[in-house]
Length: 265
Image 1 (cartoon, one colour):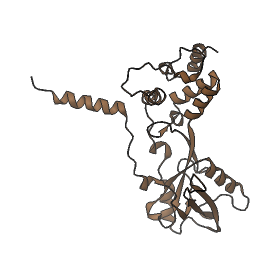
Image 2: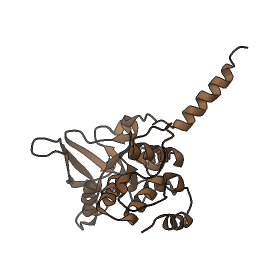
Image 3: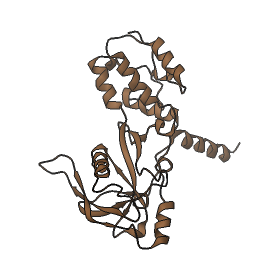
Image 4: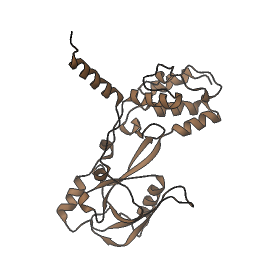
C-alpha cells in the first residue's frame, strides 16, 4: 500500500504548530536601534495611548531566544509562577535561581528618525536606564511634552559601544535646543500618528505549554521531547516538595492556593 502523503503533511503541520519556532521579523521596518555615534529622533504620540508614548513589556531571556512573558497579554505565565514559588521556598540558592529567571522589563516607544523619515514610525526598544532619563526629561518644566506634534522637541541619541573602560554600550540622550513641529507636512503627520507598529501585535504570545517546555529545558537540561521528570531541580534547596512544572496550570488565584498546599515550608 502506498504511503499517504496527506497524512505526512498533516503530521508535519502539527509538529510545526506545536514547536512554535521564533518568527523572523524585519527589524529595519519595525524597530529602530541606535547605531554608534549620534542620531536625531523624535518620540511621537503612541497609537496605543496618545497620552503616554511608552509601552512596558516583560521578557524572559534565559532561553534559546527572548520570549515575551504571557502576563503582557493578560495570561498566566509558567516562568513567573516558577519564580514566585522559588521565592516562597526561600534560601540563597532559590533566590539566586528566582533572580536568574525573573523577567526583565523593556520599554517600547514610537519614534521617527531624522534623515530616515521615509521609513515611517518605528519602535525603539530600550531598558530602564534610558526610560528613567526620558521620564525625567518629561518632568523638566523647561521641556515637558516632547512628543507634541506642534511644539515638541527632537532628541540627540548618542551611543558609545562597549570598550576596555565599559563592558556595556552606553546611550546618552539630550534635547535639541529648539522646539520644532514633528513635520511641516500635515498629511505625513497624520499618517505617522495612525500607522505605527503596536508592541503587543509585533511580539508573539507563545503557548503556555510551549513556554513551560522551554523552562523545563533550561532548568533541567532536557529537550522538548524528553520524558524526563519535570520536578524542580535539586538547586531549589533542602526543602521537600511535590511541586512539578506540570502543576503550574493556567488559572487564577486557585493556582496560588494549590502551590501553598504543595510546598512544605
